[in-house]
Length: 114
Length: 115
Image (tube, rainbow over the protein chains, first blue to last red):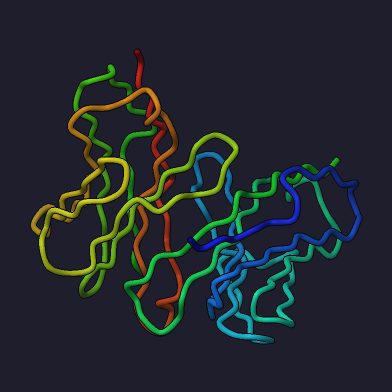
């Protein structure tokens, strides 16, 4: 089974802190994603990576950056956390190259910025 | 851009009754449609997908979905709901090239199955 692991289930950070959310997948997937989940809004794509060191902005990249130095690891960085970034963050991965492959999700990180 | 809509925020059913979670889509070309389920404080789990072929797709945990091109719908169904099916359900559609890496999600439907 594919396993996508996010380093923290719950995080509480202060406004202005630099925050790192880590994600690791064990299936050699090319594609990795960071989504943000908010009630009534579904999931919104923050950033996407299709290969090591490659990244593309999603629908809501403002205030975020990402890093992918190794194929299995994809990090989301909040440069200066703000209260409006309080949310559930979901990492996902999928095999690249075909449109019919599903994405596999981590368990989520619930981030609270105070 | 491709999009999906889930017209119901909440669905309540009694255990043993049929369960339907609605999804409609708006796409250019052939749709690639997915259903995911999220249990409390967990990530999303894949249930099933429609790519091409049979309009009735069978998935995990006894769920199935019917693709209806004329009604642009992809409703999720289960003949006999269980209390353990209580969760948040998301419909999703894959975008078209060159953005086909993207999955666009509906807002989600909360399903409550009462004993």
